Length: 216
Image (cartoon, rainbow, N blue to C red; front, side):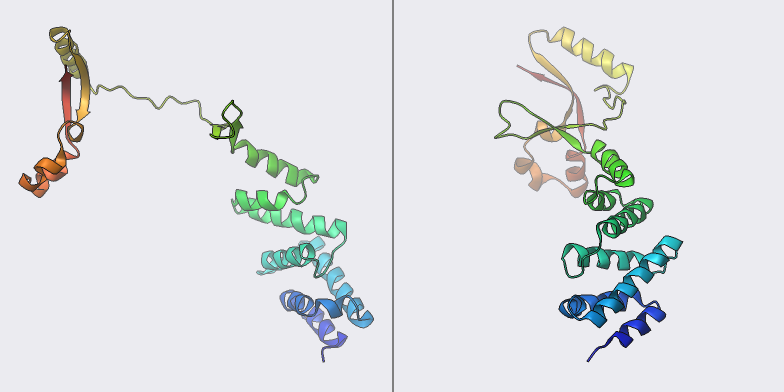
């Protein structure tokens, strides 16, 4: 039979994780037995006193997560203020670790808090914006809000000589369509010639580029 002395011993040794495991395992007792309720309340006060002082054990993040789950799962209900504090501390920890999505997921539980609101705002700016249109019920179109102001488009031609060659070919074959720098694999059917190719020739086939291709 577990009594309040066991809880006091855990509090004295600051074994918060074991205490939270006890609260979860005996959640009905910890909310009905008066002696156990008082002992658990002392544990909660001591834990938040440590939190207020900024004392962090190596398992503090895990402890806060357990407390969050107990609170949200109603196995052990915290006051509104303390519930908010647990969420904010988790948001700060994950944000400091660069785990922005994880911080955002916790922040959504407490959007009225200044720190959480800032994390939500900054993270949502990185999300694609859904663009409404007449076919929204069939096709989802998004717009990247964080698109950098950089032009990544490059020319089809890698030198002035290639441009001059293309212009000459187009001038000669004015009645035809001329495409520059066409992949060899787009012009020749690989399956029809693969048995006649050595391995080096096969590798080149998928890398080779034809300067110009003329279509009639």
